Image 1: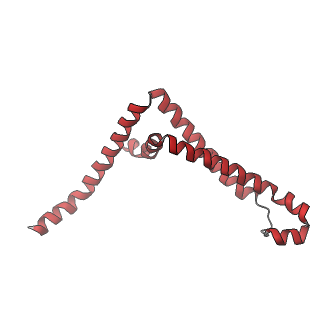
Image 2: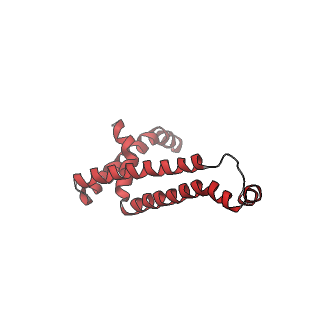
Amino acid sequence: MNKEISELFNMLEPTIGGLNKKLGVLAVLNLAKEFYSDEERKSLYAHYVVLQAEDRDAFEAISNAAHPENLGWEKRVEKYGKELAKEQIAPMLAAMDKRKDTSNALNNFRDEHGLIVKLVEYKSLLAQW
């Protein structure tokens, strides 16, 4: 008897898991409707997408700003002198500062608007229905 129940549960588990995800999506949708108007949700969703893109771009800019010679600070100063070394790493430092700002903005948004973030995460699930 226990074996039959176990087999039945194993067969139903994927279906139950799928239903659970769908119920979770519906719960988040209803909560978002409770706390945000349609206009607010659309505006915040668009803002979140922009913040994500800015953060991705800032991350990419760090790689693009790297000096072709992969030297540490001490070796760079030794080879080029302190002033030229500063000039060489300035674009990388600026890119890192920008990334810090974009990451902070993204994290602040996530903290303030967790329901919107969940909606974005569930967007792919919603498209499948």
